[in-house]
Image 1: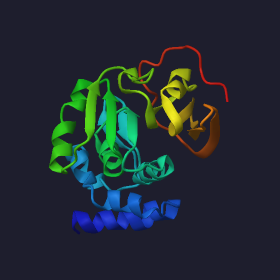
Image 2 (image 1 turned 45 degrees about the vertical axis):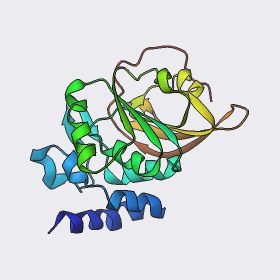
Image 3 (image 1 turned 135 degrees about the horizontal axis):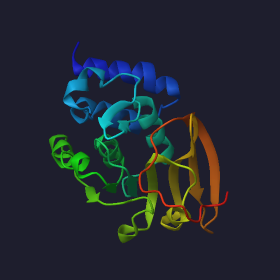
Length: 217
């Protein structure tokens, strides 16, 4: 079976069944070759409902989680987006399909190094890759219309809320151990954050997280 057929099966049996029905999101997934972002020995798992290991304890999210989070961010073509944890670069590619500019921060050079070539092979521009510690956000290019933190945190550092524009949305995975909660936070024009719990999951923690003031919901 071809990769295109496998990709469509993934969309129909995993993504749509997880209440991801936004045509823009489905088109972004359909037009982005997930297989080229997967480590070569694991490409046979590129469309499986499975967190694919990237090495160093890092993983790619499952396809349905990627699509669901992309839908929840509700991006438009002018959006400025911050992604913390570039990983394979696949989610940055999806973000770039829908947003204006994406700043993606990764602290492992060996993961970041091949991402530019993968994005180029997909014809994707507008992604700015940064090597560094994003555990306290990325102030250099703030504020952002959307922020996605791909690693889990015991609590959300208050600095992320400060870097979010009024009207912006933030996705964070909060918790530790076997059960973590995916939260969607939306900032109103007064700077007040509204919290919504989306679903439970389990992903590796964000590295370099420093204890400090967390946002109080």
